[in-house]
Length: 96
Image: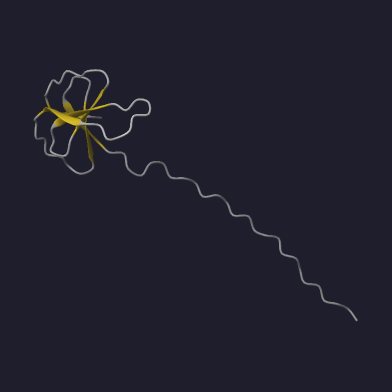
C-alpha cells in the first residue's frame, strides 16, 4: 500500500515519464519511442526536496503527488529440481 509523502499537484502531459530524481524533486523525460538514439533530456518540473529512505520506492501518482511504497525484494523462491541418480552397473568377475 502506497502512502503520500508530499502534495505537489503536477499536471502530467502525455509522452513524458515523470519520476522522483536523486534530490527528491519531480522531473520528467521524453518517453523513448521507435529507434531514437541517445539519452533523453531531463527537466525539473517541481522542486520538493523529499528525503528518501532506503528500501522505499518513490513515484509520482495519478494526482501528481509524490507517493512511496515498500520495495518488493526477493520474490518467489524457486523449487529445486530432484536430481536423478545414475544407474551403476555391477562389476562382474570373470570365471575361469
